[in-house]
Image (cartoon, rainbow, N blue to C red):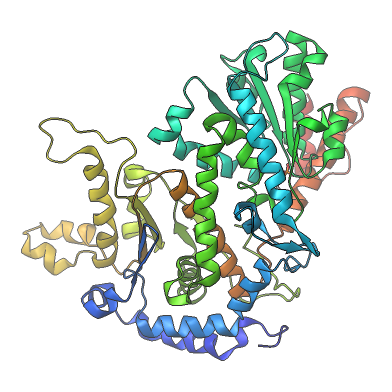
Length: 534
Ligand code: F6P
């Protein structure tokens, strides 16, 4: 495929376009009756089982998707990513988050430099610092140990670390290491969030980690200044050196803010904000909470998937399979969303050509059976939304109550196994008639079924598995982007809102401080701003 050819102009895409019309005539009930087909759709790797037999696909579909992958030069693009080429072409950068979890002796180059060495210098620094904070040899301004950490950051500088923290909190090994410690995250700029974060904490026992790739993000910097004032007010300005550290690619701005550069933990422009959890962005706050040894296991889990993604054949490659099936669902079935626990969603190809197809789905999800009690009505009888079900064989916190039919984890997992079949098979009016359901209720109790899902069964949920899970989903995004021919690693789409907010911020300042009238906005915004300023 010539680089300027859109993927939708290639023969494999056209083949899939006509193939989908055949598949639309087949119900998942029939597909699930074909044992050979189902057998070919179960893949195991390092304690993770993927079952994609409830996708509206046949082995023939998969072959066509592999042809599409070839037409999109998927393997070459994966190689180019691992080789540190500037595949983020709109920002002229390498995309090397895989180097963040590479073994110490690995070599990965960006612009002729082995970045793995830099990564391990920072990891060693985090290990040393977090051990000193945890064992009380690094103390606050009044000599007390720092038991509580507030990580200030937003977007990729928040969500990844929060995800890992949420999962580790209940892992027996990790939680034991966190005894007596607290980790909180301050992201939103609403003053309510500041109040919630500092509630019950004392500056003298709190360490603030300011996490910002650019060190310019308005929300993060305002929250950081607010916490700096909170510390200074109680302990004096000199206490900041002991109570605030930073994670950033912009060490000059860190120093300007008043944080000692020795207490800054670097990362690099080849780490996209949304792929940064394995850099100091996640590793520092998580090591402070759980200790570096636990976090190192998380990095090793992610690295296991990196190796697998790089080398496994497509038919056995978990992120590739997930990515291809997403492309199938979005671009050929036109399903708009996916339930699962991103910088796709572009309007133009990597060469800037407008795209006549969608390049992303809206992801949403819920833990456990919470979804059943909120949006499952919609996914069973309303819109068709492909689902990912993620379950674990062994609970982190098993509960066995005497007299119960099954233990709590089995109760949870009953739903993990039942829901995909309910979505796939549905329930026909004939089945309802046989069950003597009243005639007038039959339309309400009928389920069309034929709704695709895939299931990932993990042997356990510990730091290593969390790392694997994270890397699978990171690489799925890349696979989708590589196939669609878009840049999954930039995000110009968030810039317009940010720059308009800057304009409003200037106006609010001018009106409040100098009494200047609101001007330069449309009627609606002027009216609302005037009301707000009154
Ligand atoms: O607005 C999106 C974004 O740029 C993300 O990519 C990033 O993770 C987040 O904002 C925060 O940016 P920073 O880490 O530079 O503060």
